[in-house]
Image (tube, rainbow over all chains, first blue to last red; front, side):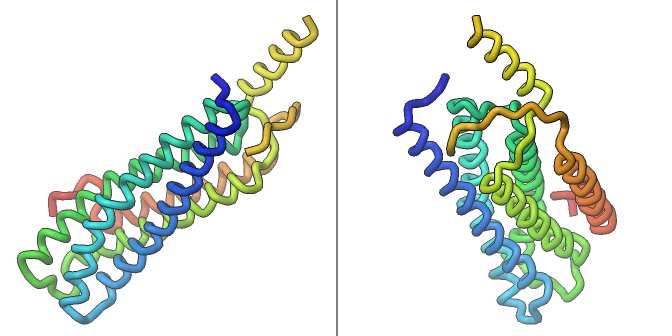
Amino acid sequence: MIMPPALRKLGLTAHVGSSVGWFGAVGAFLALALSGLISRDAQMVRAAYLDMNLIGWSVIVPLSLASLLTGLVQSLGTPWGLFRHYWIVIKLLITVFATLLLLVHMQPVGHLARIVAATTLAKGELAGLRIQLVADAGAALVALGVAAILSVYKPRGLTQYGRRRQREERATGRA
Amino acid sequence: MTDPTPDDESTPRWVKVFGIIALVFLLTIVVIHLNGGGLHSHGSQ
């Protein structure tokens, strides 16, 4: 079903807003993960992991789900479709993968938040996990940056399904 | 969003290059996870 222009613009605004907000919030998440890893101030480390847990659940998870949902509506409700163009399929994969990775990583973030709420994290304690959170936040930032670039440049290229639909539509148009 | 323009190309080169880069990127994430305790250890440390 193709949406009317006014609804398309509203949907696009919601999609751009949630996606850009997600990107910015992950930037803050990375700054906190770095602070939690390298800071020598125990209060700073405590605040970093408590805040990561807070912004993760209250900002990043809702924005990631909103970005995914509005992206689905936007592609299915316009002539672009969901599986016709490579750039849209790749964006969908990035969004789904980043959302799943985020949901998986909210568990160790919660674990770290519970630890720092109860006690002081010793230097080097859970270092592997803390490095991993920095790496994942950095990877998410790169992936979301790529998704933003794809949205702006919209590189050409139809999928096999897209080419088949195009042939069908041309045949229908001629008939 | 403007409407898409018709396109008859076969799989573009940028998709293939992107696929290779994405694979390397994913492998790097997996290696970091294995060194950092593994995905299986989430929430259990």
